[in-house]
Structures are given as structure tokens and as C-alpha cells.
Image 1: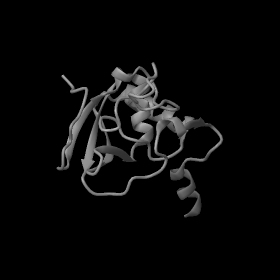
Image 2: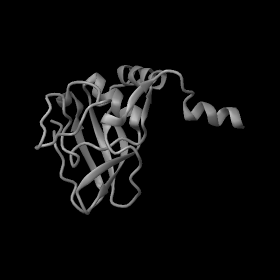
Image 3: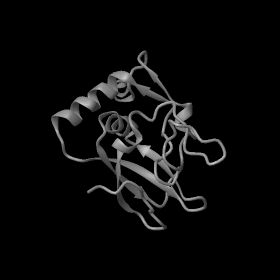
Length: 143
């Protein structure tokens, strides 16, 4: 059984999140807010990380979904836990996380207690794009 919520506390480690509980992609969706509830909201910011970048490249997402379908092993993403407010921030693995959510699969959050939160601040600020060259492809072109 994969836990559906996390409480990382002050120490680093790995916790598991069942992406099936959010019912699809987090892209464009708000975090849970007691003041203005929304039916499509994501879990609390202490349970689900803020995104690392503003865009989800559809071709990369398709690759990650295919990889998940071909290999059922649990995937992991790197996150940072901010002590002052208990929030999680994604550092690496945004496309793996979105793919796991779309596929309704569990994922592991490798939590570090030090690191720098990246922008954007919310999944509401993210969007799908299909006109971008993924960073790994840009890096290959510069070599």
C-alpha cells in the first residue's frame, strides 16, 4: 500500500504519493485552499510539490508515459522541503511526475532538506506546450 499523504518533517528521505488520488494531470490546477475551495484542486502544498518549471512539453510527457507503461517500476522525483512553511518544491522530474499523475501511478518523492525552490509557485501557472525543444535536445545541439 502506498501512503496517500506525507509528513516529511525536518529530515530528508523518501516518501510515496499515490497520483491516482488527484485524478489526472496537475497542470493548470490550483492547490487546495480552505478559503476558496475548488473541485479540481490538488492536495495541500505540504503533500504535493510545487512545479519546477512553467511548461510541460507534450513530446517529453509522451516519452515519460511510454516509459511508465513499459516499465512498471516506481519512479522518483527530487523535491525540497522548506522548513519554515512545510511546503514541498519539485527540483527535478516534472515530466515524470505529470506522467505518473496522468497514468494514475504512485511516485516517490526524494526529499532533501536543503535546496532552492524554483519558479513557478503553483501548478495553476503551468501549461502544456508542443513548440519547445526539450533541454536535453538543446544540450546535444550545443556540443
